[in-house]
Image (cartoon, rainbow, N blue to C red; front, side):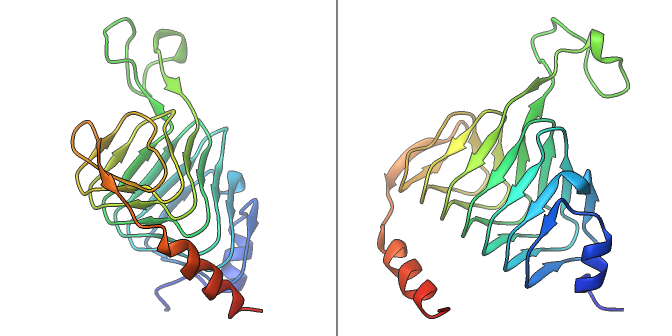
Length: 189
């Protein structure tokens, strides 16, 4: 048996939409598949966990989600084109209340919990390093890069590198990748 689902199998899984040249590991766990849209040229590796809540998950073109990464929550999660997610990254669009005003965990009825859900957006050319965590309501703007093991609690500016817990702006990132994108896309025509 092949490591990745074939085209026929992908169409039978029930995605909201699925593009061409998709590699999704058979070892990935997929929940709420009818709320997941996938563009073209996407790869999702072994042991990834995608759980699309009411907001859904939208994955653009030329996106890679590396092994052991998770996208989970009730809020919408969007990965625009050319996003790269390293291994063991977790993106949350929902979180329990940690202040003690409510009970927590999914075994408790919702009227006793204070789950916070908010959309998460990773714009074009965002790069997320190994083990980073992105919390609900965050927008990581075009070309931003997040260092390994960082905790992203606030929006990140375009073309900066962030690192730390919480993630803070470190230094400017080159925009040459935009020229390379144009060159690459022109080879496809």
